[in-house]
Amino acid sequence: MDFGVLRRWWPVAAVAALLAVAAFAAGHSAIGASRIPPVSDTIPYVPDYPSPEAVRSIPVEPRDAGEATSGGVPDWLLTAVLVLSGAAALIAVGYVLWNVVRGALRRTTRAAPARRIRRTAEGTAREVVAALDAGLEELDDRATDPRTAVIACWVRLEEAAEDAGVPRQTGDTPTDLVSRLLRGDPEAGIPAIASADVLDGFAHVYREARYATRDVDERTRDQARAALRRLRGELTSVAGPA
Image 1 (cartoon, rainbow, N blue to C red):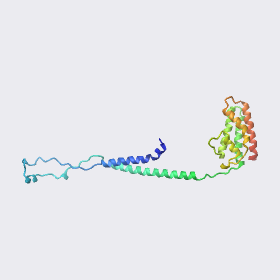
Image 2: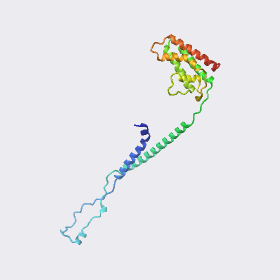
Image 3: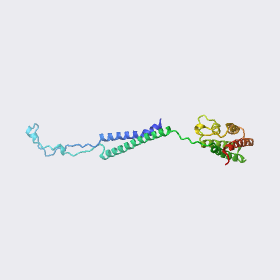
């Protein structure tokens, strides 16, 4: 079941139901009725075959004099149903109009091209260097598990790429996002700040820490530290003095 369609059109269905209830109530509303009162005991004796004159002389109470009886749906209930139906109809119309306007605004926003912010190579390089410094500090902490430290360093690089505006594409491998951060992405306005080859050493260490079933020892920590320092050295030449 498409719950989106149900959520969008349930007010219209509710109004239709209320209108049906109102129509039913109107069809069974109170209607006045007349009742002929019982014949008075003072009616004179009528022969078995009365004459026309005798029949005309028999007193008969007019029909309109009977007491009115009531039945069916009370008037106040019918009024309440009509008021609720009108209010529900107004709410439903407003809800539908609101959905139409919101959909049009979404289509307009989606169709409008996003304004690209051109980033400088220096600013992007400084942000990545800051992420590398945080990773190196964690790697230097011998109390931290080597596998956890290496993976955390790579996650910082991915976060730096996302903060820089590098788009994540369908089918990206773990290294694709960071590689586009280093070599640049002209369509996203990301300048090149380093060669993608400089990332190969750390990417190899990351894959080993992430997917290897063996224990990750201090040798892996040292390899990760050396790879990050090499990458930092290349980025420093682009970032310039702090």
